[in-house]
Length: 125
Image (cartoon, rainbow, N blue to C red; front, side, top):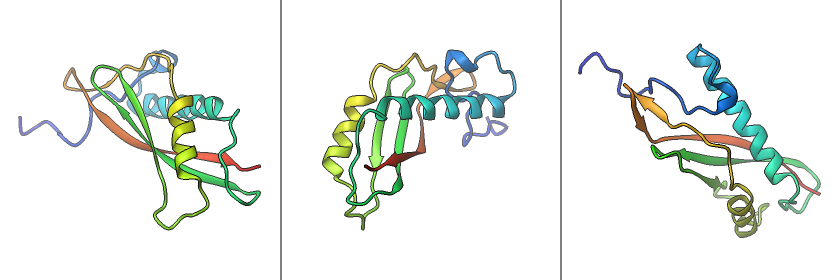
């Protein structure tokens, strides 16, 4: 048991588009790229508002559970008034549904919960 690194997963979460990649780090990069693209596609039709015409970024905490369930939680800067937090939160939760199946991360062959933070670029109109 002392030889197991309990702070790192054996296999990162995985989607079908990345499962043919054998290298662990390349699989991880593929997964994050895929997830980021899907999130952008799903949010793109909506306008997440700020009061100025700028590109801005919001961080989203993504949790992948052992049963393949996935949740998204926007993280807002504590001093930011630029976001309509309620509207942004509801848009993210409403739009980020019906994801393709995500295989959970594994530790020594056992599915485990993982969390990570993805930056999502918002284009304000």
